[in-house]
Picture 1 (cartoon, rainbow, N blue to C red):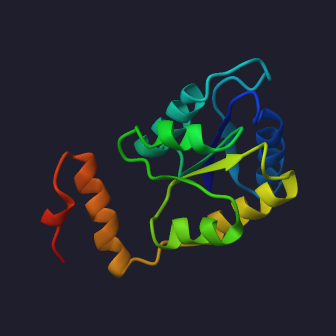
Picture 2: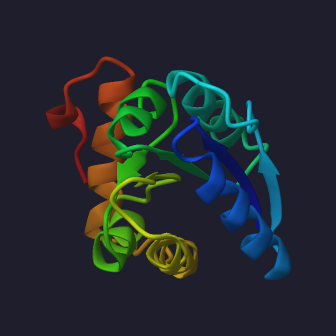
Length: 154
C-alpha cells in the first residue's frame, strides 16, 4: 500500500519511526513536507498529504501534530479527503469501516509511539464496510460539492 506521511515539528519524531515500521512491513511510504524538526505550520503537511491522497498518488495518508486536531481540520479542507482524528484502535477501526476515512490524524503529545503504531496498524487493516455506510459517505461528498446531503437518496 502507498501511504503518504506528514507531520509538524511536534510529530516529526513519531512520523519518522512510523515510516520505518511501515516500510519494514512492506508498505511504500513517503514523508512529504519538512521533516527536519524545525518549526512547521501543520496546514502545510496536511495539504501535501491530503493532496496526494485526493489525487490517488497515495492510497492513504497519516498526519501527526501535537493534538491531531489542527491536521484534521486542515486536511478536511482538501477536496476528496475524509480525515479522522482518532485516539484509540476502536475509533481508528470505525473511521475506516463506517466513514471510509482516507487520512488518519494523530496526536504526538497525547499518544505514545507504541499506541500510534497500533492505531495505524488497525486503521490500515480495516476495510470500508459499504452497505448503509456508502450512502452516508455519499452525503459527505454531496456537502463537498455544496449540495444538501438530504438530496442523496438510496
